[in-house]
Every structure is written in C-alpha cells, then in structure tokens.
Image (cartoon, rainbow, N blue to C red; front, side):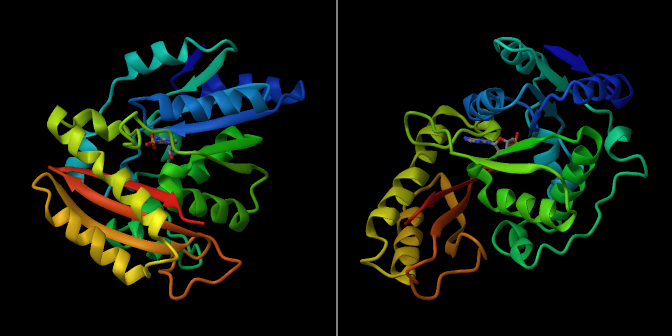
Length: 282
Ligand code: AMP
C-alpha cells in the first residue's frame, strides 16, 4: 500500500504507470470502509494492473451539515484494511484544495432529469456535489475503470451520465450490493446505529424482498401502501420515500412494460441516521 496526501506526490507515480501501459481501477469512497467497499476493491483488483482507492468525505454532496459532521472518519482503521490486499493499493487522501482549487462549491450539471428523482428530491444539490467531486477525481487520476456500488443505484446512473456528458475515457462499472447476514445493506452510516436500531433496520431488506416477490401480482400503488403501513408499525424506522422506478429513467413506474427493468428504492431514518437501499424487481 502506498498512501498519498496530495496530488503533487501522486501525479508522477500515475504518469509512470500510464507510460508502462498499466490499466488503473478507481474506487472512490468516503471511508469508514466495510466489506461492501472491499468487494469493489477486489473486483478492481481482478480487472486492472493497479488500483487507486480514495478516501474523501466530500462536503458538497451533503445537504445536511449534521450528517457531514457526524459522518464516521476512521482513516487509521481504513488503512489497516487496505494494507491487507495481495497487490499493492494506491491510497489517495486528498487535500480539500486538490479537489476544490477554486473554493468549495459545486458545479451545476444537467443529467437529463434523473438528478431530480428520489435522492435528488430529498437531498437538494446532492448530485451536483457528486458530479463535481467525481469530475475532479476523473480529471486528476485518469482511471481506466471506475467502480461504484448498486447500493447507491441512482448515483451509479448519474456517474454513467457524467462520463457520457463529459466524454470521459473511463468505463463505469456497477457492483452488487453487499449485505449483512440480516440482509441490511452495509453502509458506513450503520456504524452510527445502536444494536436495537441495527436489528430493526434489517426490516428494509425484508420489505424489499417481499415487494420483489409480489411485483407483477400487486401494482405499485398497492405495494407502496403496504410498505407505508408496515413501517408505520415501527417505532424506530421512519419512511422518507418508497418508490418503484424504471432503472434507466428513474421515473416512477406507470405500467409494467415488457422490455423495461424496474427497481424498488427506499430511504428511511433510523433516529437521525439516514439509510437507503434498493432491489432489482425483474
Ligand atoms: P461511500 O463510501 O458510501 O461513498 O461508498 C463508496 C462506494 O462504495 C460507492 O460506490 C457505494 O455505492 C459503494 N458501496 C457502499 N456500500 C456498499 C455495499 N453495501 N455494497 C456494495 N457497494 C457499496
């Protein structure tokens, strides 16, 4: 593992590898690494000569300052996990000024409307922040392949749009959701949950699995009402949104069309911690 704290030190190493014809796999993270992140890194490992992992809690993608302040930051533990990989990993912990040389602000992007659905509705400016930080990373690192989890499915679609819009020479690769034995999707934010909250949060995957099972026999309205009713019973988990949407447009389903793919998406609060999850339905 080689750790870089600024772009000046990293640039010559990346240029050297490029000259040698190496492919570079890029896994952007906000740290507090878990098995979900590691699964992305493993895939990047298999498919590239070199892998770069970034750890950066990006201020511009947080619409809620409390969420930003309380986001778990445990870089030392992260580095121990990253040092266990067989091949050497490049780890980049950027300075704010590497990413935001002209001040901490977002650019505005037009992602064709998908930025206004779901997460975009509930987290103002979130995808402008995501687009800004990733455009900056892609420009600095020039990776061959970049890996993103389906856990943040809307983000994955946004990044694909970003790469197309900006004509970036990078392949965007989606990776499956890694879950706890309870079914709860792994998330850095889970570290903020107490035991009782963690147990109750497993309801998300149970609800999504039932929705997947009933999709096609019950319509979207019935399924949505059922999810709302089930979550009203919980004193610990509060629903923010549940939606069944077209995977490509991310617009709510109207009627099931044969050649389209659909997913169910959910966002909840467990105490002050916000969790999201989703499942492919067909
Ligand atoms: P984050 O550190 O939360 O920004 O996540 C960094 C990357 O890891 C993103 O592409 C996430 O979608 C992905 N990721 C986070 N949790 C999981 C998970 N449970 N399974 C698969 N990928 C994940």
